[in-house]
Length: 213
Image 1 (cartoon, rainbow, N blue to C red):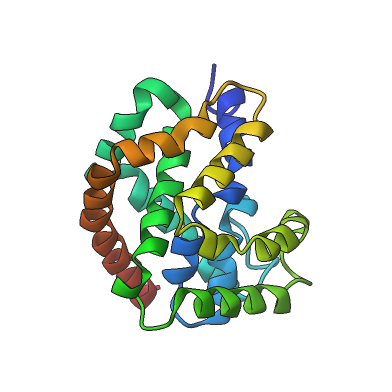
Image 2 (cartoon, rainbow, N blue to C red):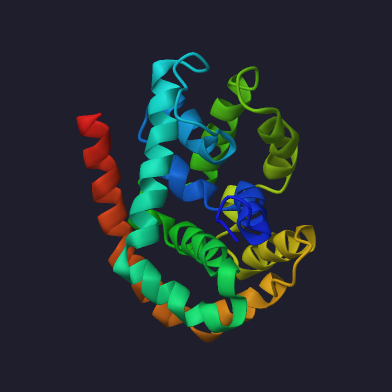
């Protein structure tokens, strides 16, 4: 079965709307439109975007894709996914994205001088200011994201459990994602070390990409 027609591939694409928003927003820098583009990157398809969005939003969408491509092939991330693959199979990358957002949120002061609650509220405000141009699916999700304060909730394992359990309920396939927080706790230090090895590489790559594009 081709990648294009694979039901699992289609399902994984559909699940991306609850994935690592925090990392993408953080890696966007200070430009609000780049932040918006990076935030909506999973909801926008195609390569010809200049007629759909302002140039800086297109830049943010392309940054999102660059971040995903860099992450998918990074050897440290591959090790994290390898630990989960026997149990979660195709869903391992989705779970690792959420795990890494947890470590970013839980250790936020190592990466930002702005508090996580302040960063989250600022991000929600920027997103709401652009509601007229962001995809409808994002607008439908946004009230739940703000009410549940997803960006802050990921700092707690309970928040990770709620997110992954919600994703598990939305897939028609057996994913076992509702059990993934148990594996996070079981291998917590290994995942944490891998995040700290990987994330500085990703941050440096995103900053360099922004300078060159």
